[in-house]
Structure formats: structure tokens, C-alpha cells
Length: 358
Image 1: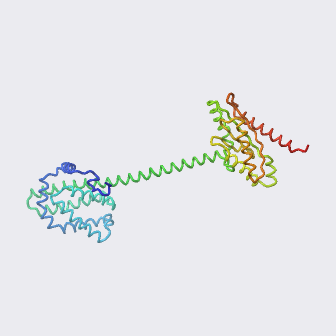
Image 2: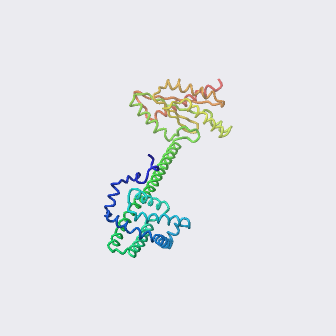
Image 3: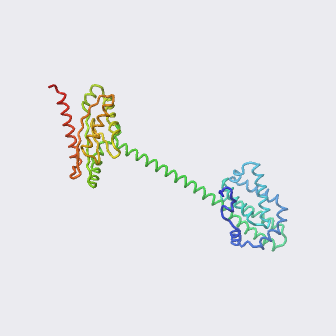
């Protein structure tokens, strides 16, 4: 059963046992019930005056007058007050009576009646009812017993009203807390996402999208240490774009940037997930190939990269050097980079010699 279809008694698990226990806390006995029933005719006779005077006193309080607002609301409140006074002296204080009192707490919280205003209203009502009993009940013993019984019953009612008032307040606090917690989680997630984006940006070259050179040494050292543990080879490729300065000088820097982006896309297109691809310098690129021999790098990587570049409309020429280390002895990162760099320059020089006239 969903909560909205339950009575307040069911929502708060308020049983007959709890009702009797609550009455016993205020020493509300059958003798008190009988005393209240006996003075009911006196209260009925003075009902209109009680309700009229009560609301005259209430509307003299600015905060209460503001809450009441208009004549229609006042009229409805007067009807509800008559019903409540009749209930007080009915002698029937069962679960239905309790449920009505519990509802008052929620209503008062919803419309913004503060506890001090509610308590002052109860005090006013008690004073008016006690005055009527004292004035019109001739039996002194009955006058005293009914007045005392009324006080017990009103205290009983106050606890019921405050139960749901406080429960409603705690519910609002819980809702606010949940919203705050969710906001904090959302904010934390956004910060986490943004931090991840910033970390990625700090690792990436803004032009090509490849990793930048700041993380080359760290990444290469990590790959080499992992390869040592597994006794696997590592290959390192060093790439230089031939005649790049001439392109920049003759066609402009935008043309040069376009060539760099084309080379980067070709590198990304043929690289494995475990490969690390870097823009090393202005027109230089590096690729770390874990668990890959020089022969495999030359056949499966270098040749494919050249084919990819040739398939592009731009005229791009690359010099490519490959160095291998492991699985027996492993070079340090600087030495491995230098070895691939040297081979790249050897290939570049061979190209220059081949272009010279014989």
C-alpha cells in the first residue's frame, strides 16, 4: 500500500495500545471521561459565544489574522472549532478522534501555524471553556473534576498534534537533505568529469589530439618496466615529416597544420589500443609499441603508415626510424628514443642522397 492511501494512524503505526498508553501518561481515566460528558450540555448552550469570543481574541493577534486572511476562511474555521469543542466533551476518544487530531498537526504545518501560535490558541480555548464550566456548573466537585479532565485531554491532544507537526517537519528536512546530497553528488560528478577532461587536455596535443611530449618519458618508462616483468620486446618509432619547413614557408602555417593533422589521423588509424602515440615536436611524432619486435613494427606498422599517407590527397613524405629493446636487455627511455631518432636521420639522409643528381 502506498503511503498516500494510508490513514495517519497507519502511517504512524498508531494502535489501540498506543492510544491507551498515551491516555495513561496524562492520567486520563474513565472518571475524567464521565465528567466531561456531564458538562457537555453547558458547553453546548454556550457554544456560539465560545467560538465567537475565541476568534475575536485570535484575530487580535496580527500573525494569526494574517493566516486567517478572509471571511470565508474564518467561517470555515469557526465550523471546525465548533466540531472540535463538541468532540472534547463527547466522551469518545477513540482512534477516529486521534486521527483527526493527528491531521491537525499536518494542516498547521502546511499552512504555517507556528507551535507558539497553536499553543497560545489552545491556552485561549482552555481559558474560555474553563470559564464557562466555572460559571455555569453549580456542582463544585463536577466543576473541578471536569476542568481538570479538560486540561488532561487538551494536553493529550497537543501531543498528537505535535507528533505529526514534528513528523512533517522532519520529512521536509529529510527531503531537503536528500536534495542537498543529490546536488553534492551531481556536483562531485561534474567536478570529476571536468577534472578528467582537464587531465586529458593536459596530456593531449591541442592540434593533433595525440599525447603530448610531456608524458613521453613517463609512459615509456612504465611500458619498459612492464615489458621487463613479462620478458616482452618493445619497439619505438620516431617519425619526421620531410621538407616540413618548406611547406610552412611556401604554403603557410595552416597548410603545415593540415599536414600534421593528416599524419596524426593516419597514425591513430593504424595504431593498436595498447600503443601510445605522441606528437614529439613541431613535425615529429613518436609511437611506443609494447610487445612488438622491430621486424613486426617495420612490416605491420611502418608499411601500413606509408600506405595510409600515400592514399591521402596531400603530398606527404615521412622519414621513419625504428628501435627495439628487450626481451633480454632493456635500454633506458632516453637511449631508446635516441636510437630511433638516429635511425630516422639515417633514413632521411639516404633520401637526400637518392634525390641528388648522379
